[in-house]
Image (cartoon, rainbow, N blue to C red; front, top):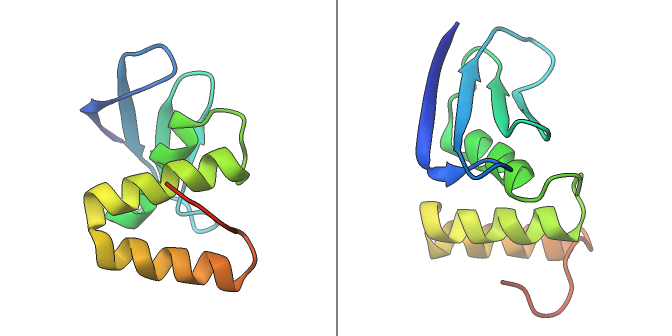
Length: 103
């Protein structure tokens, strides 16, 4: 098991978020709300998966609700760029996940 941390992203306690890699065939990854730890399945160290899990860390307890979606959109815009943000926003609107003004 390897561990690395991202000093730019704080967990719920304000400290660095720990990202752990582990083998799993069922999920790409998940975030642990209480600790801010992100656990990734084997081969899941892709920026889109990491951003998804960081969105969970910055919106603890939100599930995939509005706070999570807002955090994910902000992270995608900042890290993957405006075109990726626009594509994600278009898809979320098509699926009726997002309406109106967004971050």
